[in-house]
Image (cartoon, rainbow, N blue to C red):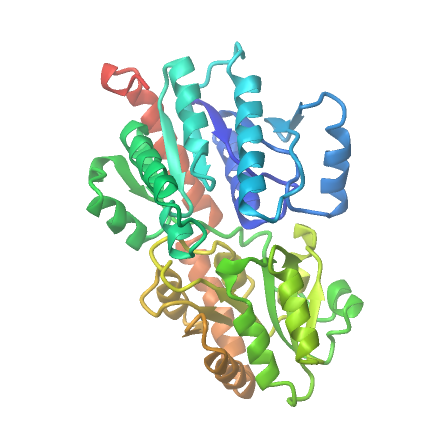
Length: 422
């Protein structure tokens, strides 16, 4: 078995998708017999009680704190709450990277292999520095294709910065022992950029179907927010520009006369105040905003959602797949995917049979999709149940994390050869 260092921006008790994904993966690697250490931030997004306690605990042992949980040794670096603008966020990343290096570089513990996921893409520099320090290989997991996603969304326009990010991308792919991607189109995009097929591995994200299960609609969450008699369209996650959630709010405006229809937006982000103002300006009685919820409530949230909305900005169809879609399908819920029709997200939803694909900026199309699913609710409920079986067959946790186990063992063993000296 191997000693594995995981360098990741977010980790439980943060409840965003990447945190939960890597929390499950780390635990499964321990179950396979590996010795795993995680270098991460304090709870960065979440306001649930467990995350709040972690932030309070980090006041001791500043700027980082190490703990052991379920066989995992976790080093958490203090950093400010998630800034809303790009420059402060980049500075927060830089602080996290510096803290990770300060905690890991002097360590007497020597890993055999490093696993680091993007975003942010600069995490690759940390993985490379640690690989150099210990003369070991690192595996770079591409959760989002950078800098493509930032450029396509218009978040990065400066030519010098784009050039630097492209150089960082090439530097990362050249020096990583393996590059893993989560979708077929990402795989093809990196092949086209000259990344050798022998270096690439396609390992999708997954859902834990033991944790994510259908539960009764009448539950604590639905009672707390008065959703018992409503037909609910929910979005849960980050509310930023990439999500184009204005489209969902404007779809709600088109359906505001439909009785007992509720659009539920759960989470936070830079665009939440803008969306709240838009809903207020349009005087929408059918739009409700809810703060981030603990991960433990996800089953309840999905249970009272007749439709789950998963957006992906236009132009980013090859840049990633929102991993929440696997959990939604595992919960047996119908999906409206607001994405390009040939995207990996769109193909996944259509292949599962549990949803419809619409344009990410077409509010009328979103409204029509809502009406179609609402008018044939029994049919779509059955489709959702079939989608859960689809996830169990193709995207179950145990099968996917085993692929990481086998890959990391293989890379660690190859490192004994001079060609893989880090």
